[in-house]
Length: 434
Image (cartoon, rainbow, N blue to C red):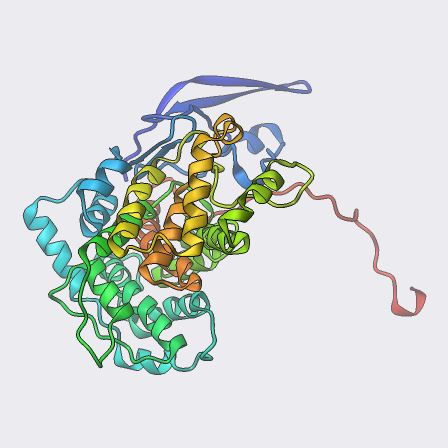
């Protein structure tokens, strides 16, 4: 990756009797950055930034977020345009290669992915070693990490061709493994992928088809899921993406790096947000109970919080939520299930959040997790599969970030520092004198 950052002046720090000058760089958009990579060498001080919320850990040309303005760009393209006009395969190519594919490139990339969707036959034996009641994310963590044992001919990260094959394999096999994890936990036979179906249609069939009857695809439902996949593909240097980059910085194989990302995504503060939103709706239970929960949400002394409203990054409306809201309502109309008690609660909460002065003033708009949770429930996915679907779509972003990191000449193994507050140096005391 050729660096595109430009120096834009310098920052000056005075620490005791020492003056430190640090370069300031500008990117294409977003805040300028102060380069502190040599700060310790020149000053003898570390910097402290818990959670790295004010630290740029890398240069990236993939995704840009402006939380104040509610902007999300993939390679410069607004997420709303891509979700409405593009497809999963097309956007995957964009994230990986930097540009939208022309027809021939699209056909080749689609073919490369399609013909890697099947898994090694012995992989089924491996999967059958899990307990039947295992959480699908537990299976995903183990199964994706184990891919390096089945496909060790594509684990040499110094070989560009092996990196490319590993990329195609992971993107292709993730839906197959996700569907297998689901089928395994409910005791149904695995459904083999079909090469004449597109990416999302194939996944829906592997999830919900059974040998006893023909499977009928619903274009509205498949389109909604395709949008969910696109909207979740990448989101800058979030926790799981940073985990993938950190694991990759050590030279770990790509399957291990993605497994690390899946493990991080499993955390309820990250990938479990749409699951938490749906569980909250089920807790509320009935439209008649909403006023009580709204009152609790406004009470700072009450621990209850409305899940799926507002966003840590977006201080304005989540741009992904605009697309997801439309797709959500299309699904509800297509299935004619607006009378479902949980969905009725969701729709009334949505109405209140968009009109209530308290929510509008604090910009607590429904976010993508709110709408995707409702949509996935309507599509027939059980709650425990929500984060699995997140992992499936985010795999593309993780791989794009991993690939970019390996091609960055400034890349080095991650090694955060700390401020030590433990015991000072002390001498060992023999056991009989303690």
